[in-house]
Image (cartoon, rainbow, N blue to C red):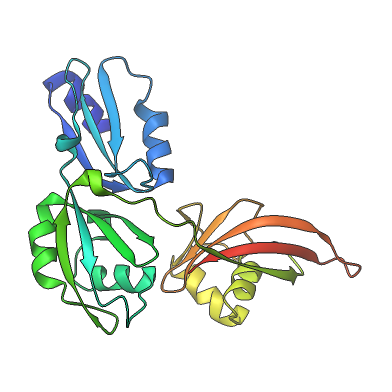
Length: 240
């Protein structure tokens, strides 16, 4: 990123990144956001987008939505007969052998599913995605202005845990043994607030987002106190 910053300032080039998660965006803002000689902007194709592409240009250049090279697709599938989940949609996209960084957000609300894709791979993805889960599907390109507001669909539950360690929390939320959770952490498959956590004793706090590859995402909604046996009482949500 610092090399890009120098290229923009000295050589007057512009740079467009792949999709960045919120943590990566914050790092970029910290590194570059106060440089008056460069212009920093983000877009994920929707004001609700979490994953966004970053454009870095000389300060005298304007950036439009077209400059982010985004494509929005609607997933056409037999919604009356099949229910699709976020992980199934993402799994089908990833099975194409492309980097996760080329895919933006997947928006889901009731029977409507949309996904944002980098334009440089959009035609390939549209031609090759034919099934998601057990459903036959078709991707239809639509205007970015047709984005939906994703449904904030957290399935809430409560639990009591002996510790706020990440291995304990993940085991409880996903109904896994701690012996199964440890290898997931060691292999870099567990993230907290979009950052890979490689220590099982990492402490989870209220409001933290947790994601486990192939198991989905969860959020610690509240730490509601302690039990008489000195266990933590939690309320958490998991993405459906």
